[in-house]
Length: 309
View 1: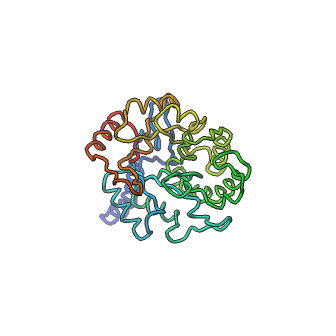
View 2 (view 1 turned 45 degrees about the vertical axis):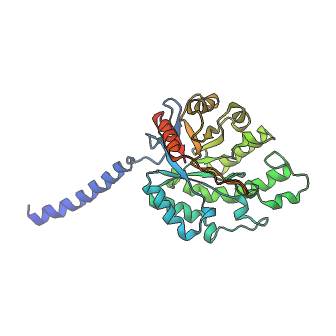
View 3 (view 1 turned 180 degrees about the vertical axis):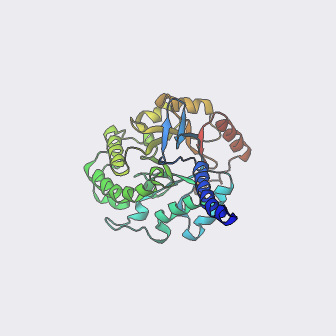
């Protein structure tokens, strides 16, 4: 056989080996599809069958001009994070009933694409209530046109508006789920509901069914509440993985014991580790010790917890 013939045979083999190597590097084998799940037996998340832990950071696209999204995301990636967490403010995209805006600075789909291109996973928090120190926690003010409406409850008027909004948003998010080739690994339902007076389990059950109907059964849905059993009592519910949030001054052992009250098995998760705090008009600027933040973060990582800063 001539040298030319040998070269002619070797090139396709090299190309095939290169593709196979790329598949191995990304943790996927031939014939399998991406997967992300909760491993209750081993107290961890599983990504494509392998144990996975996220160390993420919150970034609100709604507070940052689109021109700066890439800069901010790159800085988060270079800081060593492997995921980001972001809210979707309802009132930012539907300022008037039935009038949706996902253009320009509101183009959340572009934000998700950009995040994936940079190499970060996404923890999506679409509400409908997000808190986030944002007007009405992201709920549109026009909901209050219904005089007797009870927000964040099974109130018929509120549920009708939520169903319509989620019927618009969630189908847009579905292609970006990790199982579908996108960056979204988990999706939060509501936000710190255990701190709200209503304690309406039927409302949370309705949201669970609504999210499942639009996103499917494979996606990991979760809740977030303060690290106390009293918060988890009304904030957690069956079929939604319960997580907690707390800052650097908290007792980490006690905080995760509260999570274990709701989730005896599965990964430890601090969905909001407060590296700072909000300011109030007329009050002194809030400052959190960076040394205390680092110390608390190290302790959480030592017990293999997932953390969002």
